[in-house]
Amino acid sequence: MTELAKCIGCGATLQSTNPKEAGYVPTSSLDKDDVICKRCFRLKHYNEVQDVELTSEDFLNMLKSLRNEDGLIVNVVDVFDLEGSMIHRLKDIVGKKKVVLVANKIDILPKAINKRRVEIWLRNRAKDFGLNPDEVVLISAFKNQGIDELLDTIEKVRNNKDVYVVGTTNVGKSTLINRLIEKSVGEKEVITTSHFPGTTLDMIDIPLDDDSYMFDTPGIIQSHQMTHYVTDKELKIVMPKKEIKPKVYQLNEEQSLFLGGLVRVDYLQGGRRSLTCFVSNELNIHRTKLEKAEDLWQRQIGELLAPPYSAENFDFDNLKTTEIVTENERKDIMISGLGFVTVDEGAQINIVAPSEVEITIRKSIL
Ligand code: GDP
Image (cartoon, rainbow, N blue to C red; front, side, top):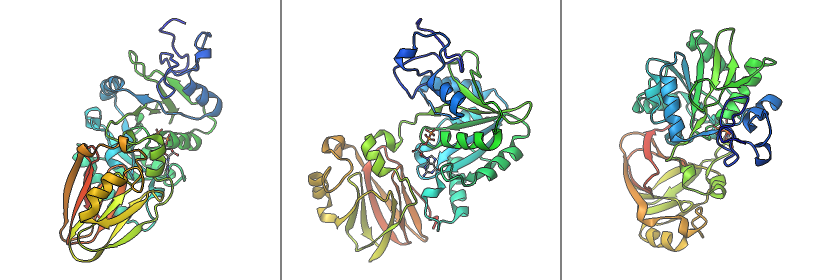
């Protein structure tokens, strides 16, 4: 094989080192003629998409090439890990294009949530990232909820233009694209092409009508996602798969809750009250007195307080304390990648977490 052999489906340079990157083929296929990469193979034979990840260099290329296209941007985010799934430089490619913000994994949130408040929160956060979505749609790609509404919304907003679906890895973009292929394409042929000459990006095009297409862009790797700070085994515990069962704790002042061994919630002031934790059902929560908390953390990390499963994986020198006061209304304290804690008004709380983990606060969605 020459180093520049390309996939005949999408044009990506073939490689056999990273199955998650574009152009992956098993080593045994590298020497053959007319090779197609694993992603194109699956698409061709099973009508099924696998996402590939994008390095920052590829990302810059994609930014450049998408910036000049006219069309609708469909930005898929994880409603449970919004901080980790917002694309920081998306506004650079959006320009004057319209945006539909799609919040996936809605099935993980308890049924009792107020969807309107979720939408307002999403719009506010999008604004912080310089985006002003034309529509916000809540879906579960996994449970097939909201997909028809999403297709209708896309049809309404796109104005006969092409559609670009963007998202960071793990937001469920492939699951969604597969749903969209099932629904909107049926028997029609789905093809992969190298849409932008001069880049190695393979994009999946799904025909929308005679003149326009929906393009699936590669998943963007976001360095501050929680997923990059825990091991795969730990991630299975930390990332909820199913609807969260809220856990309610009655706390006195000066008591602490440990979320696994990753984050500590210190309840400081506001009388005896309840704190409700919305985290993965598998994540262990431990209550203790504030005065004992520091020592317990140091001694029991990886044991009673886990995940992390190994003390070496946790850097006590890299913790940050965020002070929170819930003044006059119920708030959700969002711990990026882990979940949220709901607290009524009039409480003073400190969150101690690894400094990469973003702590934000929103009007409660319950
Ligand atoms: P991609 O990297 O964005 O293409 O994400 P995938 O489609 O591979 O999905 C990432 C993970 O999220 C997988 O474990 C999926 O099963 C899961 N997932 C995708 N969509 C949903 C959803 O709507 N709800 C839930 N609970 N999980 C989902």
